[in-house]
Amino acid sequence: MDKRRRSVKPKKKRKLIFLILLLFLGLCTLVFISKSSYFEINEIYIQGNKEVTDEKIVEIVKKYNDNYWLLDEQELKQAVSDHYWIYNVDNIQKEFPDQLYIEVSERSPRGITSKNGRYYLLSSDLIVLKEVEGYNHRLPYISGLEIPSEIEVGTNLGGDISSDVAEMLRMMPQVQSGLISEINLDLEKNEINLYTREGTFVKLGELTKLEEKLTALDKLSEKLPGENSQYYLDLRVPQYPVLVDKHSKN
Picture 1 (tube, rainbow, N blue to C red):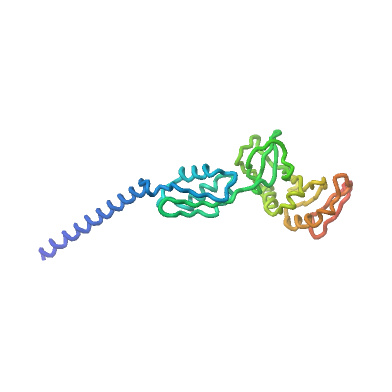
Picture 2: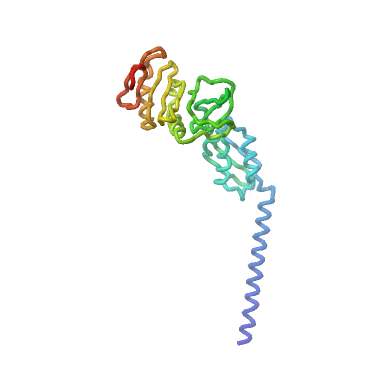
């Protein structure tokens, strides 16, 4: 009986020593992987960026993590997406041992606003993309926004009514974007109204059925009255567009 007990103890010791060695080897491997320059990402290929430079995205990667094994694609995707020009990171792919492929979609200017005589390009989700000199007439001017006293590039101007403007800008085809000169927000009435390039006032009313209203506007664009007309277009009920006398009380 004593002999059997004595023979069991050495086996347990050998198991324990083996586990400690295995753990030690695992730690050594982890340290080697994290510190070895062999697994450091040295080649980064970027597609889809125009406004954000390759150097800026590479800087984000290097700042975040540039080790092939330790790089988490989802976390890196979030880090790159945090840049105000990046609308979406479409794909991140690693290729052993030191290559990384990143494909992005950028925001594009869809409107313009101003504060204290300074003009700013806005994306469809109302991110301030850049400050520009003067008014770019190719983009609709967005008035009525609640703008802070100081605007910084990257600021999100989205809010209650602003989120609906963002939805409209996303839905707005290029032809309509070229047709509209101003998007006016009536914060008290919670309404959106437009001015066309020809000066026609278009009443969209409440923030509902925006897609239907824009479709109706597109169909009627060639028949709209000009700036000097006594009529405006009422699209509050998109199925029944009406020309209304500006001097009426409706």
